[in-house]
Length: 379
Image 1 (cartoon, one colour):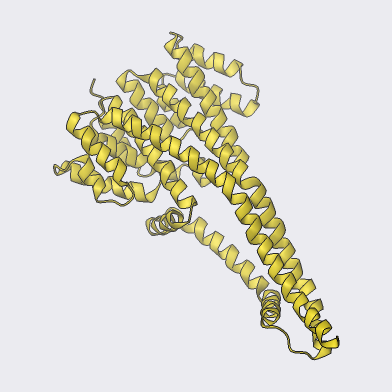
Image 2 (spheres, rainbow, N blue to C red):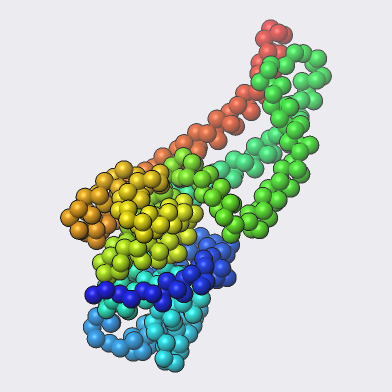
């Protein structure tokens, strides 16, 4: 069944980058990490229960009433009831998701595709699986970062205290003996003096950077610059790349499996995934597809897509099995992402502890070296 996505595409192009302009979009609000977990939990539960109810023959109105009855948090219940009221007035489920100011553009466009393709239950099940995996990954990342971040901030405050109070005390003692200080000790004393003089300027630079980020985060040049920096960060850059490759493969699997035309699928995904490198790549791929190039040829000219995905898509195009191959790629990338998160969890904590411990050791050694020299001279 061929889905008519003309009105979807026209709506997208009439409101460019809708997800980025949504004031309640999760990417545009300074929210705590725990909020991400709670929000995704509600989405996972909502899509999972709604999929089961709809596949069992329960109508939309009754399904929402059942889901709302089982929710205890008042804020979550209000979100469900708001969507229920929109549906009662005659709107579709995708429209209710869009007007709820809670679900992302990825959510309601996926549901709209399911509504038009007659595969709503399958789409809801896919969304539930997506958020379930996302919750697991977020918990893994939180577990990997929680203790190292605590150690890092504690160590930073300790170093600040040592540089600002302890080192000056040792400096006064050393000056009384009029001895020659070791080079390491001199360097630490210079660092301590610089910290005292320029701490205010460091703080102002940090605040200025935050303000500039808020003012420019929607501009193309800034999104290009920050995404390039993110992708070059060791370990984290690879994780970010994997996350968006996984999402790309999942969405392509959903669209192609719903018989959406390939060119239209690329146009939809470009507006559903909010990450500059993949947006730029998909825009170029869309133009190349319209000129007769294959999908693998279009993807091959962009470094964001690795050789594995390009070669597999090339084979899939030859045998006309793109949906199956994207499903396999999604599973592979998801498994690879889980492994990398677990690896980061096992390596980050000891590496950070060793790094911070080394800094503290250098300061302590630099302070005690003159004392050792003084004792040797007296002896």
